[in-house]
Image (tube, rainbow, N blue to C red; front, side):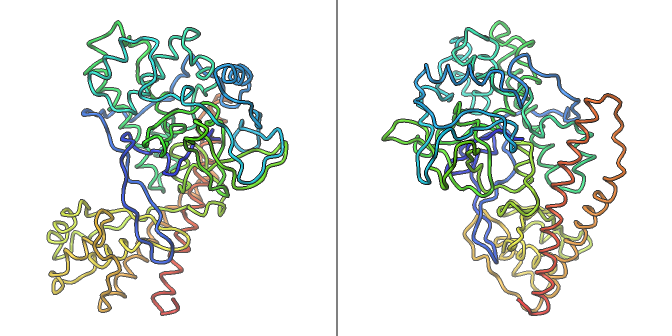
Length: 482
Protein backbone atom coordinates (compact mmCIF):
# COMPACT_ATOMS: atom_id res chain seq x y z
CA UNK A 1 0.00 0.00 0.00
CA UNK A 2 0.97 3.49 0.24
CA UNK A 3 3.51 4.68 2.47
CA UNK A 4 2.38 7.83 3.60
CA UNK A 5 2.49 11.11 2.41
CA UNK A 6 1.92 13.42 4.94
CA UNK A 7 -0.79 15.67 4.84
CA UNK A 8 -0.71 18.96 6.43
CA UNK A 9 -3.40 21.30 7.10
CA UNK A 10 -3.84 21.57 3.39
CA UNK A 11 -3.86 18.42 1.30
CA UNK A 12 -0.88 16.76 -0.22
CA UNK A 13 -0.06 18.75 -3.26
CA UNK A 14 -1.65 17.03 -6.26
CA UNK A 15 -0.30 19.47 -8.83
CA UNK A 16 3.18 20.34 -9.99
CA UNK A 17 2.56 23.85 -8.72
CA UNK A 18 2.66 23.44 -4.94
CA UNK A 19 0.81 26.68 -4.37
CA UNK A 20 -2.06 25.89 -6.74
CA UNK A 21 -5.46 25.84 -5.08
CA UNK A 22 -9.02 25.60 -6.30
CA UNK A 23 -12.15 26.90 -4.67
CA UNK A 24 -14.41 24.35 -2.99
CA UNK A 25 -17.57 23.13 -4.58
CA UNK A 26 -20.72 24.07 -2.70
CA UNK A 27 -22.57 20.92 -1.67
CA UNK A 28 -26.30 20.84 -1.41
CA UNK A 29 -26.47 18.32 1.42
CA UNK A 30 -23.00 18.29 2.95
CA UNK A 31 -20.31 20.73 4.15
CA UNK A 32 -18.01 22.20 1.50
CA UNK A 33 -15.04 19.99 0.69
CA UNK A 34 -12.10 20.98 -1.46
CA UNK A 35 -11.75 18.98 -4.64
CA UNK A 36 -8.56 19.66 -6.55
CA UNK A 37 -8.52 20.11 -10.28
CA UNK A 38 -6.23 18.36 -12.69
CA UNK A 39 -2.46 18.67 -12.16
CA UNK A 40 -0.82 21.74 -13.72
CA UNK A 41 1.93 21.00 -16.19
CA UNK A 42 4.96 23.09 -15.34
CA UNK A 43 6.63 22.25 -18.62
CA UNK A 44 6.20 23.83 -22.03
CA UNK A 45 6.41 20.63 -24.02
CA UNK A 46 4.48 17.40 -23.79
CA UNK A 47 4.83 14.07 -25.43
CA UNK A 48 2.48 11.48 -26.83
CA UNK A 49 4.52 8.79 -25.15
CA UNK A 50 1.80 8.10 -22.60
CA UNK A 51 1.71 4.57 -24.00
CA UNK A 52 4.26 3.57 -21.43
CA UNK A 53 5.54 0.07 -20.99
CA UNK A 54 6.34 -1.61 -17.71
CA UNK A 55 9.29 0.27 -16.34
CA UNK A 56 12.49 -1.15 -15.00
CA UNK A 57 13.37 -0.64 -11.38
CA UNK A 58 15.86 2.08 -10.53
CA UNK A 59 19.22 0.90 -9.12
CA UNK A 60 18.58 2.37 -5.67
CA UNK A 61 16.00 1.99 -2.93
CA UNK A 62 14.43 -1.25 -1.73
CA UNK A 63 11.35 -3.42 -2.17
CA UNK A 64 8.24 -1.64 -0.97
CA UNK A 65 7.67 -4.06 1.91
CA UNK A 66 11.34 -4.42 2.86
CA UNK A 67 12.76 -3.67 6.27
CA UNK A 68 16.34 -4.33 5.13
CA UNK A 69 17.36 -0.67 5.37
CA UNK A 70 15.03 0.39 8.20
CA UNK A 71 17.55 -0.04 11.02
CA UNK A 72 20.22 1.88 9.09
CA UNK A 73 17.70 4.69 8.45
CA UNK A 74 16.72 4.88 12.13
CA UNK A 75 20.38 4.87 13.21
CA UNK A 76 21.30 7.65 10.76
CA UNK A 77 18.31 9.79 11.75
CA UNK A 78 19.15 9.44 15.45
CA UNK A 79 22.79 10.36 14.84
CA UNK A 80 21.67 13.33 12.73
CA UNK A 81 19.44 14.94 15.33
CA UNK A 82 16.15 13.00 15.48
CA UNK A 83 15.16 12.72 19.17
CA UNK A 84 14.23 9.34 20.75
CA UNK A 85 11.00 7.99 19.27
CA UNK A 86 7.98 6.15 20.67
CA UNK A 87 7.55 4.40 17.31
CA UNK A 88 9.56 2.03 15.12
CA UNK A 89 9.34 0.86 11.48
CA UNK A 90 7.74 -2.57 11.28
CA UNK A 91 5.80 -4.70 8.82
CA UNK A 92 2.11 -3.95 9.20
CA UNK A 93 -1.21 -5.21 7.87
CA UNK A 94 -2.15 -1.83 6.42
CA UNK A 95 0.64 -0.53 4.21
CA UNK A 96 3.32 -3.27 4.16
CA UNK A 97 5.51 -1.23 6.51
CA UNK A 98 4.64 1.60 8.84
CA UNK A 99 5.33 3.18 12.22
CA UNK A 100 4.21 1.11 15.20
CA UNK A 101 3.91 2.29 18.81
CA UNK A 102 6.65 1.03 21.13
CA UNK A 103 5.11 2.60 24.23
CA UNK A 104 1.71 3.87 25.32
CA UNK A 105 0.83 7.00 23.34
CA UNK A 106 -1.77 9.40 24.70
CA UNK A 107 -4.45 11.21 22.72
CA UNK A 108 -3.26 14.77 22.07
CA UNK A 109 0.43 13.86 22.29
CA UNK A 110 2.93 15.43 19.88
CA UNK A 111 5.14 12.92 18.06
CA UNK A 112 8.09 12.87 15.62
CA UNK A 113 9.92 16.23 16.13
CA UNK A 114 11.87 15.87 12.85
CA UNK A 115 14.26 18.86 12.66
CA UNK A 116 14.30 20.99 9.47
CA UNK A 117 17.90 19.87 8.85
CA UNK A 118 16.53 16.38 8.13
CA UNK A 119 13.91 17.60 5.63
CA UNK A 120 14.53 17.77 1.87
CA UNK A 121 13.35 21.07 0.39
CA UNK A 122 14.13 23.22 -2.64
CA UNK A 123 16.86 24.85 -0.52
CA UNK A 124 18.68 21.62 0.40
CA UNK A 125 22.41 21.51 -0.32
CA UNK A 126 23.40 19.54 -3.41
CA UNK A 127 26.27 17.03 -3.44
CA UNK A 128 26.86 18.41 -6.94
CA UNK A 129 26.72 22.13 -6.22
CA UNK A 130 27.03 23.11 -9.87
CA UNK A 131 23.95 21.08 -10.89
CA UNK A 132 21.84 22.81 -8.26
CA UNK A 133 23.04 26.24 -9.35
CA UNK A 134 22.17 25.53 -12.99
CA UNK A 135 18.59 24.54 -12.12
CA UNK A 136 18.07 27.58 -9.91
CA UNK A 137 19.53 29.90 -12.54
CA UNK A 138 16.90 28.52 -14.92
CA UNK A 139 14.12 29.15 -12.35
CA UNK A 140 13.03 25.51 -12.21
CA UNK A 141 9.92 25.23 -9.93
CA UNK A 142 10.08 23.34 -6.64
CA UNK A 143 8.48 20.10 -7.82
CA UNK A 144 10.84 19.30 -10.73
CA UNK A 145 13.74 20.82 -8.78
CA UNK A 146 13.25 18.42 -5.87
CA UNK A 147 12.59 15.52 -8.27
CA UNK A 148 15.92 16.20 -10.00
CA UNK A 149 17.65 16.67 -6.63
CA UNK A 150 16.44 13.26 -5.47
CA UNK A 151 17.86 11.56 -8.57
CA UNK A 152 21.15 13.43 -8.25
CA UNK A 153 21.59 12.48 -4.60
CA UNK A 154 20.57 8.87 -5.29
CA UNK A 155 23.26 8.66 -7.95
CA UNK A 156 25.89 9.77 -5.45
CA UNK A 157 25.06 6.71 -3.38
CA UNK A 158 27.07 6.51 -0.16
CA UNK A 159 28.71 9.91 -0.65
CA UNK A 160 25.31 11.65 -0.34
CA UNK A 161 24.16 12.56 3.15
CA UNK A 162 20.74 11.20 2.15
CA UNK A 163 21.99 7.73 1.18
CA UNK A 164 20.36 5.97 4.15
CA UNK A 165 17.05 7.69 3.44
CA UNK A 166 17.10 6.96 -0.29
CA UNK A 167 18.04 3.32 0.38
CA UNK A 168 14.85 2.99 2.43
CA UNK A 169 12.62 4.45 -0.32
CA UNK A 170 10.74 2.00 -2.56
CA UNK A 171 12.33 1.24 -5.91
CA UNK A 172 8.89 1.38 -7.47
CA UNK A 173 6.41 3.56 -5.57
CA UNK A 174 2.75 2.59 -5.64
CA UNK A 175 1.42 5.03 -8.20
CA UNK A 176 -0.63 5.04 -11.37
CA UNK A 177 2.54 6.41 -13.02
CA UNK A 178 3.60 2.76 -13.20
CA UNK A 179 0.47 1.50 -14.90
CA UNK A 180 0.86 1.07 -18.65
CA UNK A 181 -1.56 2.82 -21.00
CA UNK A 182 -3.02 -0.59 -21.84
CA UNK A 183 -3.62 -1.28 -18.15
CA UNK A 184 -5.23 2.12 -17.59
CA UNK A 185 -7.53 1.60 -20.58
CA UNK A 186 -8.37 -1.93 -19.55
CA UNK A 187 -8.92 -1.66 -15.82
CA UNK A 188 -10.09 1.94 -15.38
CA UNK A 189 -12.27 2.28 -18.47
CA UNK A 190 -15.36 3.03 -16.34
CA UNK A 191 -13.73 5.53 -13.98
CA UNK A 192 -12.95 9.20 -14.61
CA UNK A 193 -9.70 8.66 -12.69
CA UNK A 194 -8.33 7.07 -15.88
CA UNK A 195 -8.19 10.51 -17.54
CA UNK A 196 -6.50 11.96 -14.46
CA UNK A 197 -3.88 9.22 -14.56
CA UNK A 198 -3.18 9.68 -18.28
CA UNK A 199 -2.85 13.43 -17.77
CA UNK A 200 -0.48 12.94 -14.85
CA UNK A 201 1.75 10.61 -16.85
CA UNK A 202 1.72 13.11 -19.71
CA UNK A 203 2.66 15.92 -17.33
CA UNK A 204 5.60 14.00 -15.90
CA UNK A 205 6.86 13.08 -19.37
CA UNK A 206 6.37 16.64 -20.57
CA UNK A 207 8.22 18.02 -17.56
CA UNK A 208 11.13 15.66 -18.14
CA UNK A 209 11.25 16.50 -21.86
CA UNK A 210 11.27 20.20 -21.05
CA UNK A 211 14.15 19.83 -18.59
CA UNK A 212 16.05 17.62 -21.02
CA UNK A 213 15.72 20.08 -23.91
CA UNK A 214 16.29 23.28 -21.94
CA UNK A 215 18.90 22.16 -19.42
CA UNK A 216 20.07 18.55 -19.39
CA UNK A 217 21.16 18.49 -23.04
CA UNK A 218 23.21 21.65 -22.51
CA UNK A 219 24.99 20.28 -19.43
CA UNK A 220 25.49 16.55 -20.16
CA UNK A 221 28.44 16.40 -17.74
CA UNK A 222 26.08 17.39 -14.92
CA UNK A 223 22.96 15.54 -16.08
CA UNK A 224 24.03 12.39 -18.00
CA UNK A 225 21.13 10.66 -19.73
CA UNK A 226 21.98 7.29 -18.20
CA UNK A 227 21.07 8.83 -14.82
CA UNK A 228 18.54 11.56 -15.65
CA UNK A 229 16.00 9.79 -17.86
CA UNK A 230 12.26 9.19 -17.97
CA UNK A 231 12.50 6.06 -15.82
CA UNK A 232 14.30 7.81 -12.98
CA UNK A 233 11.93 10.76 -13.26
CA UNK A 234 8.91 8.48 -12.96
CA UNK A 235 10.52 7.14 -9.80
CA UNK A 236 11.27 10.55 -8.32
CA UNK A 237 7.86 11.98 -9.18
CA UNK A 238 6.25 8.83 -7.78
CA UNK A 239 8.10 9.53 -4.53
CA UNK A 240 6.96 13.17 -4.53
CA UNK A 241 3.32 12.39 -5.29
CA UNK A 242 3.19 9.96 -2.37
CA UNK A 243 5.45 11.74 0.14
CA UNK A 244 5.90 15.45 -0.51
CA UNK A 245 4.07 17.67 1.97
CA UNK A 246 3.34 21.34 2.48
CA UNK A 247 4.11 22.75 5.92
CA UNK A 248 1.73 25.65 6.69
CA UNK A 249 3.83 26.97 9.57
CA UNK A 250 6.94 27.12 7.39
CA UNK A 251 5.32 29.57 4.95
CA UNK A 252 3.78 26.72 2.97
CA UNK A 253 7.14 25.23 2.05
CA UNK A 254 7.02 21.79 0.45
CA UNK A 255 9.30 19.10 1.84
CA UNK A 256 10.14 15.44 2.06
CA UNK A 257 10.21 14.52 5.74
CA UNK A 258 12.17 11.31 6.43
CA UNK A 259 10.68 9.08 9.14
CA UNK A 260 7.37 10.97 9.05
CA UNK A 261 6.82 9.61 5.54
CA UNK A 262 6.69 6.07 6.93
CA UNK A 263 3.29 6.84 8.48
CA UNK A 264 0.32 5.30 6.71
CA UNK A 265 -3.16 6.69 6.09
CA UNK A 266 -6.39 5.96 7.92
CA UNK A 267 -9.78 7.35 6.91
CA UNK A 268 -10.68 7.48 10.61
CA UNK A 269 -7.82 9.84 11.50
CA UNK A 270 -7.79 13.61 10.99
CA UNK A 271 -4.35 14.51 12.30
CA UNK A 272 -1.76 16.05 9.98
CA UNK A 273 1.87 17.09 9.93
CA UNK A 274 3.14 20.62 10.46
CA UNK A 275 6.18 22.47 11.71
CA UNK A 276 6.08 23.29 15.41
CA UNK A 277 7.94 26.53 16.09
CA UNK A 278 8.34 25.91 19.82
CA UNK A 279 10.06 22.53 19.43
CA UNK A 280 11.58 23.47 16.06
CA UNK A 281 10.55 20.20 14.45
CA UNK A 282 7.92 18.63 12.21
CA UNK A 283 5.27 17.03 14.40
CA UNK A 284 1.72 15.71 14.44
CA UNK A 285 -0.72 15.55 17.31
CA UNK A 286 -2.46 12.22 17.89
CA UNK A 287 -6.25 12.29 17.86
CA UNK A 288 -6.55 8.93 19.62
CA UNK A 289 -4.46 6.82 22.04
CA UNK A 290 -2.24 3.94 20.86
CA UNK A 291 -1.12 0.82 22.73
CA UNK A 292 2.30 -0.81 22.20
CA UNK A 293 2.21 -2.82 18.96
CA UNK A 294 -0.52 -0.73 17.33
CA UNK A 295 0.18 1.01 14.03
CA UNK A 296 0.09 4.81 14.25
CA UNK A 297 -1.72 6.67 11.46
CA UNK A 298 -2.13 10.14 10.03
CA UNK A 299 -4.47 11.48 7.36
CA UNK A 300 -3.44 12.09 3.77
CA UNK A 301 -6.32 14.52 3.56
CA UNK A 302 -9.95 14.43 2.55
CA UNK A 303 -9.36 12.50 -0.66
CA UNK A 304 -11.59 10.26 -2.71
CA UNK A 305 -10.69 6.62 -3.27
CA UNK A 306 -9.74 7.54 -6.84
CA UNK A 307 -7.34 10.26 -5.65
CA UNK A 308 -5.79 7.85 -3.14
CA UNK A 309 -5.27 5.30 -5.92
CA UNK A 310 -3.85 7.96 -8.23
CA UNK A 311 -1.06 9.07 -5.88
CA UNK A 312 -0.61 6.22 -3.41
CA UNK A 313 -1.74 3.09 -5.19
CA UNK A 314 -4.36 1.83 -2.75
CA UNK A 315 -8.14 1.87 -2.39
CA UNK A 316 -9.78 1.90 1.09
CA UNK A 317 -12.42 -0.70 1.80
CA UNK A 318 -15.84 0.15 0.42
CA UNK A 319 -17.80 2.44 2.70
CA UNK A 320 -14.88 3.31 5.02
CA UNK A 321 -13.88 6.63 3.42
CA UNK A 322 -16.24 9.47 4.39
CA UNK A 323 -14.51 11.74 1.87
CA UNK A 324 -15.02 9.38 -1.06
CA UNK A 325 -16.49 10.86 -4.22
CA UNK A 326 -16.95 10.07 -7.89
CA UNK A 327 -16.83 12.43 -10.84
CA UNK A 328 -20.06 12.55 -12.82
CA UNK A 329 -19.74 13.78 -16.39
CA UNK A 330 -22.42 16.11 -17.77
CA UNK A 331 -22.47 17.26 -21.38
CA UNK A 332 -24.38 19.74 -23.51
CA UNK A 333 -26.24 18.20 -26.39
CA UNK A 334 -24.85 19.35 -29.73
CA UNK A 335 -28.35 19.08 -31.16
CA UNK A 336 -29.48 21.82 -28.74
CA UNK A 337 -30.63 24.88 -30.72
CA UNK A 338 -28.73 27.09 -28.26
CA UNK A 339 -25.60 24.91 -28.11
CA UNK A 340 -23.23 27.65 -29.32
CA UNK A 341 -24.65 30.28 -26.96
CA UNK A 342 -24.47 27.93 -23.98
CA UNK A 343 -20.94 26.83 -24.85
CA UNK A 344 -19.85 30.46 -25.13
CA UNK A 345 -21.29 31.20 -21.68
CA UNK A 346 -19.47 28.19 -20.18
CA UNK A 347 -16.14 29.11 -21.75
CA UNK A 348 -16.38 32.56 -20.22
CA UNK A 349 -16.05 30.81 -16.84
CA UNK A 350 -13.41 28.30 -18.02
CA UNK A 351 -15.91 25.45 -18.36
CA UNK A 352 -16.52 23.23 -21.36
CA UNK A 353 -19.36 21.48 -23.14
CA UNK A 354 -18.51 18.32 -21.23
CA UNK A 355 -17.77 18.84 -17.53
CA UNK A 356 -17.14 16.58 -14.54
CA UNK A 357 -18.50 17.27 -11.06
CA UNK A 358 -17.61 15.39 -7.85
CA UNK A 359 -20.53 13.86 -6.00
CA UNK A 360 -20.41 12.23 -2.58
CA UNK A 361 -22.53 9.68 -0.79
CA UNK A 362 -24.07 12.53 1.22
CA UNK A 363 -24.78 14.99 -1.55
CA UNK A 364 -23.83 16.68 -4.78
CA UNK A 365 -22.37 20.13 -5.55
CA UNK A 366 -24.67 23.00 -6.36
CA UNK A 367 -22.50 23.65 -9.41
CA UNK A 368 -23.73 20.36 -10.88
CA UNK A 369 -27.35 21.48 -10.60
CA UNK A 370 -26.52 24.84 -12.19
CA UNK A 371 -24.87 23.07 -15.13
CA UNK A 372 -27.91 20.82 -15.50
CA UNK A 373 -30.19 23.86 -15.55
CA UNK A 374 -28.11 25.35 -18.35
CA UNK A 375 -28.09 22.08 -20.31
CA UNK A 376 -31.91 21.78 -20.37
CA UNK A 377 -32.86 25.45 -20.50
CA UNK A 378 -34.94 26.48 -23.56
CA UNK A 379 -34.17 29.42 -25.90
CA UNK A 380 -36.66 31.57 -23.98
CA UNK A 381 -34.24 31.54 -21.01
CA UNK A 382 -31.22 32.75 -23.00
CA UNK A 383 -30.87 35.78 -20.73
CA UNK A 384 -30.15 33.40 -17.82
CA UNK A 385 -27.46 31.37 -19.65
CA UNK A 386 -24.56 33.39 -18.26
CA UNK A 387 -26.01 33.36 -14.75
CA UNK A 388 -26.26 29.57 -14.90
CA UNK A 389 -22.74 29.19 -16.30
CA UNK A 390 -21.33 31.43 -13.57
CA UNK A 391 -23.08 29.35 -10.90
CA UNK A 392 -21.70 26.15 -12.47
CA UNK A 393 -18.14 27.37 -11.98
CA UNK A 394 -16.28 26.92 -8.69
CA UNK A 395 -13.90 29.77 -9.53
CA UNK A 396 -16.15 32.65 -8.53
CA UNK A 397 -18.31 33.74 -5.64
CA UNK A 398 -21.54 34.02 -7.63
CA UNK A 399 -24.67 32.79 -5.89
CA UNK A 400 -24.77 29.02 -6.40
CA UNK A 401 -28.20 27.96 -5.18
CA UNK A 402 -30.21 28.97 -8.21
CA UNK A 403 -33.82 27.95 -8.61
CA UNK A 404 -35.72 27.59 -11.88
CA UNK A 405 -38.94 25.73 -10.95
CA UNK A 406 -40.13 25.64 -14.54
CA UNK A 407 -37.22 23.42 -15.66
CA UNK A 408 -36.29 21.70 -12.38
CA UNK A 409 -37.91 18.40 -13.37
CA UNK A 410 -36.02 18.32 -16.67
CA UNK A 411 -32.74 19.17 -14.92
CA UNK A 412 -33.21 16.35 -12.41
CA UNK A 413 -34.01 13.91 -15.21
CA UNK A 414 -30.91 15.08 -17.07
CA UNK A 415 -28.76 14.26 -14.02
CA UNK A 416 -30.51 10.91 -13.53
CA UNK A 417 -29.82 9.99 -17.15
CA UNK A 418 -26.14 10.89 -16.69
CA UNK A 419 -26.00 8.75 -13.54
CA UNK A 420 -27.58 5.85 -15.37
CA UNK A 421 -25.11 6.16 -18.23
CA UNK A 422 -22.16 6.09 -15.82
CA UNK A 423 -23.60 3.21 -13.79
CA UNK A 424 -23.98 1.14 -16.95
CA UNK A 425 -20.24 1.55 -17.64
CA UNK A 426 -19.39 0.34 -14.15
CA UNK A 427 -21.81 -2.59 -14.49
CA UNK A 428 -20.22 -3.71 -17.76
CA UNK A 429 -16.70 -3.55 -16.30
CA UNK A 430 -17.58 -5.32 -13.05
CA UNK A 431 -19.52 -8.04 -14.87
CA UNK A 432 -16.62 -8.62 -17.26
CA UNK A 433 -13.89 -8.46 -14.60
CA UNK A 434 -14.58 -11.99 -13.37
CA UNK A 435 -13.74 -13.51 -16.74
CA UNK A 436 -11.16 -10.95 -17.84
CA UNK A 437 -8.21 -12.57 -19.63
CA UNK A 438 -5.04 -11.39 -17.92
CA UNK A 439 -2.93 -12.30 -20.99
CA UNK A 440 0.35 -12.97 -19.17
CA UNK A 441 2.59 -15.99 -18.79
CA UNK A 442 5.12 -15.21 -16.03
CA UNK A 443 3.99 -15.68 -12.40
CA UNK A 444 5.34 -12.25 -11.50
CA UNK A 445 3.33 -10.51 -14.20
CA UNK A 446 0.26 -12.57 -13.34
CA UNK A 447 0.45 -11.42 -9.71
CA UNK A 448 0.82 -7.83 -10.88
CA UNK A 449 -2.20 -8.02 -13.19
CA UNK A 450 -4.32 -9.68 -10.50
CA UNK A 451 -3.33 -6.94 -8.06
CA UNK A 452 -4.16 -4.15 -10.52
CA UNK A 453 -7.47 -5.74 -11.45
CA UNK A 454 -8.47 -6.03 -7.80
CA UNK A 455 -7.62 -2.36 -7.22
CA UNK A 456 -9.78 -1.44 -10.21
CA UNK A 457 -12.67 -3.62 -9.01
CA UNK A 458 -12.48 -2.06 -5.53
CA UNK A 459 -12.44 1.47 -6.98
CA UNK A 460 -15.27 0.88 -9.42
CA UNK A 461 -17.40 -0.79 -6.75
CA UNK A 462 -17.02 2.19 -4.41
CA UNK A 463 -17.65 4.75 -7.17
CA UNK A 464 -20.73 2.89 -8.43
CA UNK A 465 -22.07 2.82 -4.86
CA UNK A 466 -21.94 6.62 -4.74
CA UNK A 467 -23.71 6.88 -8.09
CA UNK A 468 -26.47 4.55 -6.90
CA UNK A 469 -26.93 6.75 -3.84
CA UNK A 470 -26.97 9.95 -5.93
CA UNK A 471 -29.51 8.37 -8.26
CA UNK A 472 -31.73 7.49 -5.29
CA UNK A 473 -31.46 10.99 -3.78
CA UNK A 474 -32.37 12.63 -7.09
CA UNK A 475 -35.36 10.32 -7.50
CA UNK A 476 -36.56 11.18 -4.00
CA UNK A 477 -36.02 14.87 -4.69
CA UNK A 478 -37.98 14.60 -7.92
CA UNK A 479 -41.02 13.14 -6.16
CA UNK A 480 -40.79 15.64 -3.34
CA UNK A 481 -39.57 13.38 -0.49
CA UNK A 482 -36.47 15.56 0.08
